[in-house]
Image (cartoon, rainbow, N blue to C red):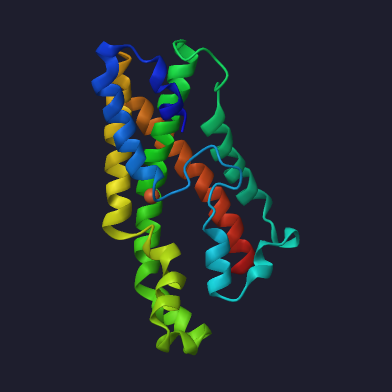
Length: 202
Ligand SMILES: [Fe+2]
């Protein structure tokens, strides 16, 4: 959203690389909610409904570590959004957000690939009626399937291409060491959230 909102301020000579960055990020954002949305993932409600567990989204089941991770994603998405778009701090926060997107897409893809092989059986064990309702079953599976396999793999590659194009359009160095640091930091943060989740449900 920030990329599109800023597009009008981009000078003509930067248009091609900037549009490329936008087109690549669009491929990620059209399937996922993206950074900068409180709560991050609007699909949570779909997943809880699939298991007839809408109550899971109630406050008493909130896990502080998971909420902290969600807040981190929100903060990254909105960081420096009020700064001048031609300022260094603004551009760097945009690049950082794209690097977090790369980390997120690659990390999630592998997690969801693992779950995808079990999800149909699990859903049918919870609700056998879904076996005769193919549309409902497909929707129930969508949360996991939509984040797994080639879809998610492509998101990771699109986010990477977007970050590179964005860096090129502003003549910023695309620093692979910095990307490595962002990815490790993401892994640590998501690990803390999943560990806390495991402690509760494991
Ligand atoms: Fe994705």
